[in-house]
Length: 336
Image 1 (cartoon, rainbow, N blue to C red):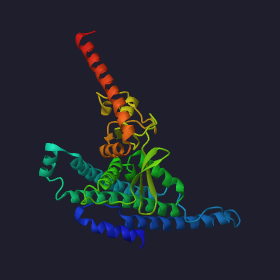
Image 2: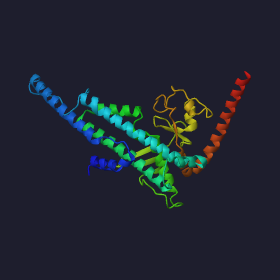
Image 3: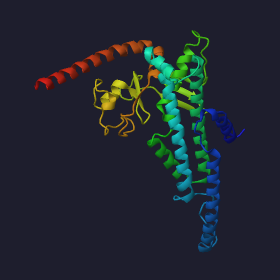
Image 4: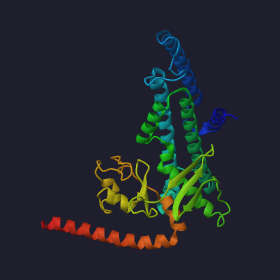
């Protein structure tokens, strides 16, 4: 079965959930129209070139010029709009699901009372499975349509679009909520022996260690692997109390605060908007940072000895920063 048909059948089965989707058929029709447009223009150009060059031509056929009215005016804007809708829906639903799963005490009962999730604990697990599947099948769909684009056009415009999407944070595989849902899955799978009612929903998703360095891995529907490195590029250790910046890079919370020139007391979101990510050097990435609590639980379970040592060191550093903060506040209060 072709992927386009498979994708349509999957999205039709999700109609009741009102999930946004890519207009796969519509985008392919745009590419066909562009192909016909460029073929006709290439043919006329080739004929003219043959006349001018005495029968030889170096112009490639079936290729799109740098400034294509069909692609620039229709294909890319349509694809970007649909990608934004898919990403926004996924992030919103994943956040609600994980908020409910991690809630405790009165907060948890309040969520249930407000109806953010209906049914049993198994329903919550199934919803997590469906969200991961939704994210991955759309990631594959985007990859397929851009691959189709590359067959019709020069790769230059496609690469520029991919870079633009990444800089705008519209790539679903960069979403911190996908990382959280993958950790959520592994956490539930690890407790399967304790509770037979828990279901593993993505067999290809796992926490792996290579040379002592952890990574989250998951196999996509087209056999392409996602590998999320869980080593902090600042302290060069396994991320502790991980946080994901809006650019998608993951750091220890205390390391991210240090890079943003803020104390733990003030918090990472109090950083200056001009501060840049230590890896990609993009500015304004701290305000929308996400604490990865499910990932924190997962790493705490699988790196217990390291976690205990790091927790003690972090406690000392936190107390030191809190003491310095209140001492500076006292000096300001007395005017010293």
